[in-house]
Length: 294
Ligand code: NAD
Image (cartoon, rainbow, N blue to C red; front, top):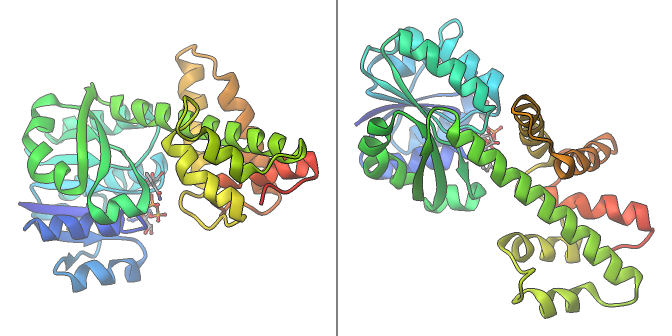
């Protein structure tokens, strides 16, 4: 299939490469020209704009940082919608505000373009090996038609969650659970250290019990070694929690835990740690308590 792929960052690049490996014809665009080099070397054609990438495509995939970037790339001057033919489809795989997905879908509908919001969970390693978890909202027939040929070439699972925006609402739920888990982990390991118990022993002892989790297994070793190389950056998690708070407040769904962790992330960003992995929540607790987990 002919696919226009827009946004070739940490996630977009390996996802695009997996689509090439699956035999799709890709035309790619990123505002940073060098970001396209690897994917072009792997067989994609380079476009001069998002509009250009959409011109001959049956499907347009976007993998961009946040709502304003997707609006610019799709609806803006030289955006994908200016090049898209009636009947083609947009699959936005960025993590953005569900309300923004709905606004973009409404504009797409006017141009005869169907849309899915289909954000992912799993990070760069799973983007590379094509085992992302994909959560989708929007046109159900479109979802069924792209599930096997496109989505499952980038992911190990693709679940239809509901109407347009439901994919991003699901992603916000994921990001709330991850953030609160990491904060609880940092709080608990700091307590252990402060009370004189080796945090590494605590991890060994409890990881197989009810408190054990994928988050615990992935993030405890980072806290124990004090290595906060991303992974998933605090700045991106702040973006997701801002979208969660906005969505929660407009749906009259208070998010007290999310608000607390958001302030911790902001304190870390203010101290210069915005580019650290989100497991650097450990640093916040280390500062509060005066001990180091590592
Ligand atoms: P990134 O910043 O590495 O890549 C984004 C790319 O988009 C960049 O190359 C940038 O130049 C390009 N871009 C920005 N505006 C553009 C525009 N108007 N037109 C064309 N290109 C444009 O981000 P990423 O880590 O790849 O994340 C992408 C999305 O996936 C985000 O919404 C993020 O929250 C989500 N996500 C990231 C991870 C992760 O671990 N990095 C995991 C799951 C989901």
